[in-house]
Length: 114
Image 1 (spheres, rainbow, N blue to C red):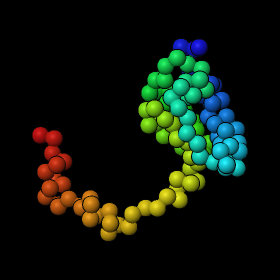
Image 2 (cartoon, rainbow, N blue to C red):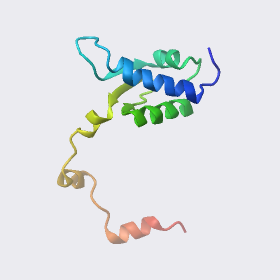
Image 3 (cartoon, rainbow, N blue to C red):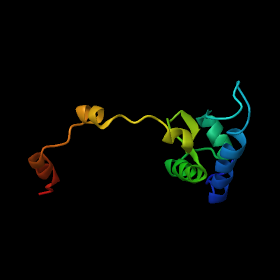
């Protein structure tokens, strides 16, 4: 196995994940989201170790193609951007109830680095 993963290899893997595996029929689905194990990701990238920088480069490359790869340490869920963009968003009222806007003077106090 390779020690470092080249940009060309990252591009190759991103394309295969998106155009081949995502479009493959398996487990009762015509196409769509799937999840890879850490071992499968290492095998795909032909490397002994998955460095954070390699995963980030793969995520960036895949995203440019339309595929979101989520790093959950032991698993890598893969789903197309179009699906993620359709996820529901909380209404502002709900969001603000859980994350209220700071008071004006609190925000000023938190901005000081002195």
